[in-house]
Amino acid sequence: MSTNINEIKFKDGKGLDKTIKDFDAKAYLVVNVASKCGLTPQYEGLQKLYSEYKDKGLEILAFPANEFLQQEPGTNEEIQNFCSMEYNVTFPVNEKIVVKGEGQHPLYQALTEGKKEAVRNDKPDFEQLLTSKGLISGQAHDIHWNFEKFLLNENGEIVERYFPDIDPRDEKITSKIKELI
Image (cartoon, rainbow, N blue to C red; front, side, top):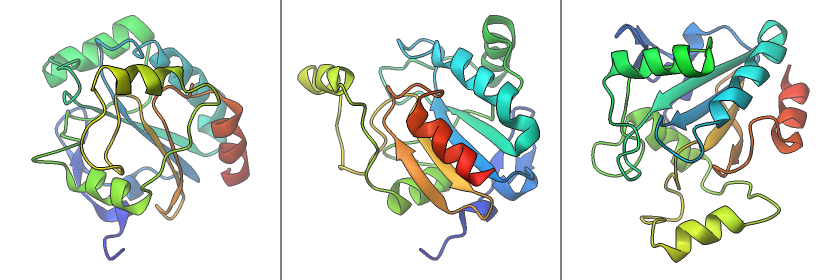
């Protein structure tokens, strides 16, 4: 891939231009998030993961997105307030972006093209539910739903991609983070 993921610009929660390389870490967990999703409680697991591994070299970068049943309708300010007040989030929650379809942010174009397959949960109940309701659409490599996760190494290379229902503190994720930090 010709695009260096570390150099793709996005806006942080205050509207300032950032790139992944602006966050000095050994491992990055990039997650598309939403405040009105059944998976929203994953914010708690993400925060626990961040609290446990931040000082060892983990950075979590959350990107609110509204592509899945409009489950992130808020403004950037409302999203920041929600994350802070409801889940005491201290990791960066960036400006809302498009993660799938028309207008897809270049970061998510690079992520989904760079790692087309996601590690699935051992029990595919959530994926089967989404499929049965016709909610998984688009290309096979597209983001499937809110809270899909990409783990990157310190050079911005994609190590793994995780299906949305895999909890942030699942061994599938934490074991890879430990390898990187």
